[in-house]
Image (cartoon, rainbow, N blue to C red; front, side, top):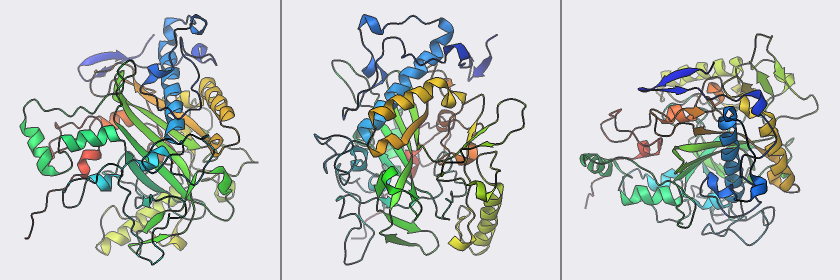
Length: 479
């Protein structure tokens, strides 16, 4: 019997993934994404009218078949975003594995700090490189690879958004995982056009009784439209025992929460990427999350069996080591978490903000991250997901991108149904981004409550984006 639950004022059927529907076949009428620099507009971008691609599937497999279509869209998007580009973000006429010193397409997108200024002023023009913090005579830290700097100044992103921080993630070398956020031009244009980049502009928008935040929706076809997109990327500082050739690598400027200064020169490898994009068939957005293949072992919490960490003894993980204990059944080390809570108390007593968990490196304990599997997110370890990843990794063989995989994609089964369109799968998280909320966390359910405006009114919904909460008030000129 199908499970039914109330979503707002509407009863919907809980998304199900029957074992019989977990196959290696493509969804009805779809093709594999090519390794291409062409960014897809929506999941229809991979649909074909060729009769040989049409396969009849039973109705109970509808959710799984649609999941497959969104997963294809996720992989195609990941490939195109990570294509080498020129300084304006135009894909180079080269292979994805070539020109490693060129910026990736997404690396030319703007960061929130370029849009939501401390003084509420006009955002940077599209295409403006992020301003470097380095003040040394050597100039920008990335001048040997790109004109564009990576400013990694966030460490408290191991949850859904910056507004509800939890302790930072500590890798095996006792370095913090770092994060950056980027916004595509469609979303940037919408924010600028509606003057949503400062609180005064948001107040004026709210004063219009018909105003409603509606970010652009992507749609393919004869008149394609590019949907709004937000990216969150996680980086690990590479140590002596890390193989840099297996990572997309940058040399960023990094903020130290203890010294309150920036440093540069160290290599960082990409270990996670969230892709959040709004489309016509997913107005509650599509939520894809990718990770490095060596990030963490699995803890399977399904069933009544005794739970343990399932690890490969021959693999060197980025965030877990059997030498540091075999626990982390909830996705992280309780010992590490407790140590950071203790550090927070010390920091608060010293007059620092309540969200300051920073510790001197010598006192840090590795987070010992694991990927938690439950009945609510088990599609992430399905035969289909494994096969899809293997197919795309084979296409990317010989490039650094063969070392990344899709965890899963969350999407709305019932678009328009409040509050979040009935997300499938029910929960989804990335071990290096939603570390503490893997068991029951849901990108869509969390972001459904995103609001904006200066009054803090929880009815001022921001169309699933917390980005607008970064807006500041305009500073009056002293002239």
